Every structure is written in structure tokens, then in C-alpha cells.
Image (cartoon, rainbow, N blue to C red; front, side, top):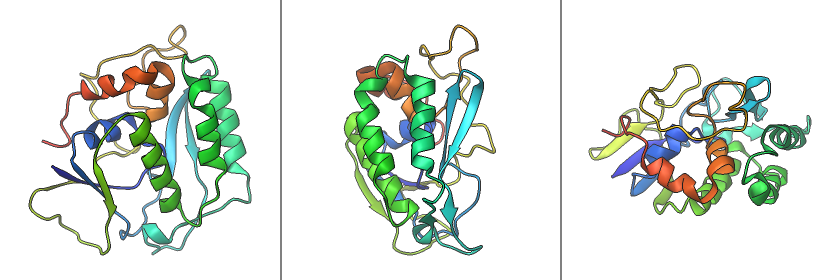
Length: 208
């Protein structure tokens, strides 16, 4: 199966669960870049609750996704890494992945799509997901037959249905209820090598 996805910055768990069921993954590069989406943000849990980490971007009102540059003047990679340190240092597998995360964050890219593609390649390796990944070369409002359009399915503005999601132990389980569909990093940091099997067991609604 072929899935057409938006680009994403350390995407949510539901995104990766759908992606692992696709033989071919196409990343949308030619859309007009929308604001306040997972394309440049991830959602984590901290001692104070949910928190969004965003990559600051430089764009115009009509910038295509592959034209969106990253603004490095605010030293956001340091802020993101320090926030992850504070939130996940107590998780079982955080230190196993931390050096890789630091490298991903501190490697400067010309644009957001390049950063996200490097993150996706790393995630596919760590989660042992085998699929062919490509990017679009032109904008198409509608997908071809046999391609599932998932570009706007995963959004922080519209909660994704997670009622039947299997739970796993999270860092702050002693003080707050289970929070589904956080960034895929939450799953990796808490489950490590078991993350692949957990993703496989997530019910699929987006790709049916």
C-alpha cells in the first residue's frame, strides 16, 4: 500500500503506526505550508503536563513546504534537548537514544523538510520499519488510485481517535493519567526495542 503523508517533526505515534503498514511512503513537499501542525512541532509530556516543542520557521504566506527555512537564531535545538532531558531522563531508554537525538537537533539544515527527512530516516532505522520513502515533485489536490491520502489526518487541532490504543508505562504515570499519541519519542524512550511491536498492535483506522 502507498500512503501520502505530511512531513512531520518527530511525528505522533498514530502517524508512525499508519506509516509502518505502508510499503511506499510519499512525503508531501509541494503543499502550501500550513501553520500549527505536526510539520514543525511535537507533543511531549513533562512533570507539568503536555508541552509542545516547535521548530521556528521562516516563510511567507504562500511558501511551499520544501521552501520553509528553519530559524536558528533562538538556539531552539538547545532548548528542545534540555526539555527532553528534563522530561525523559528517568525513562528506561532515553540515554540510549540521547546522543542520536542531540546530533539530529544540532545538525543545521537549509529547510524544515530536510530536517524532518533526516529524522524520519533515523526513526525507520530504530523502529525497524522497512518501506520506500519519496517526496512529491508537484502538487496534486487528489491522490492517485491505490494511494491513501493521510496529509491532514494527524493534527494537533483535531484529536485523533485513540480509545482502543494499548497503553504503556509513561514517566509521570504516578501523577497523571496515560496520554496517548504523543511524539514517537515518548514510545521509544519508554519501550525501546518493544516500540515496534507496540506500534504493530495499534488499531488502524486512518488507512482503511
